[in-house]
Image (cartoon, rainbow, N blue to C red; front, side, top):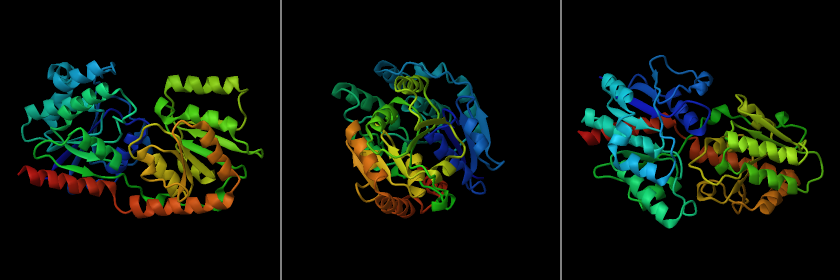
Length: 388
């Protein structure tokens, strides 16, 4: 009988984690594994962009997420099973019916209690969590809050085998002792199908175009980028394109900025798009002013399309972008330096070309070598062998 793998996700809406999961599903070896997905909400918008094997079952639930995002709620989610159990009946009923061998979580840490409760119902069940984000950066919380959150996350994660999408995520796991007894921890970096990304100079826009593909959210640095754009000295015609869905509060802040600055004509807010690769093909420079990441697929896509990337100096990004080799790096939050980097590349097309070529080679050599699904399927085999 084929091992049954169930992926658990909060949604299949527009987002980086959702894209990674759907890439895994699209490449899944359904001849060797039975594959299912449990979506904890009814948001499956991104599904229509993918063609999955009809053998993959998708189940949606109306799970009631805890709306409190504070230290107390995380402590409750980590140490009080009853806090989750009262909302988990439908989930547990479905899992018992499906009888999986492995539950593979792609959720926030607070949802991991669902897996722990499921294992109480099915003792032979193996649990795996992929952490897609650096969650406890040193400057993100006070030392006490950071230590308490790390303690709470570790209490959950120790029951799981773990996959880290980047070295920075792996370092957090090691710092806070996430690895439990007889549990496997692996670095599995996101991969990209390089054949889908074919840069073509003839498709470049006549207008020098800077592009940022990311959800408009507080941690992505959009407001830094807008303030830096005001400071760019390049006087010829240029264009900044922001692509991605928006959190309502950030969308309001961006709109307020545009209104206060007379609806700056060279800024385009395009929202969520299905033609991202085509829009990247038109661009000349990519930016990534983010405050927190894991290993963003949007970054790999920009590099695969041979774009030089200007990024903030957070470790998650500088592990990939090397200053003056495949992009430019500036101090996080420093809008003067960000503006100077944009100016530099706008005024130096040859440097753009060199950095972009190196960016694509970086992706080919490091992130374009293997199917992400096959890397996880090897991990599943190792987990099941380890459990015997």
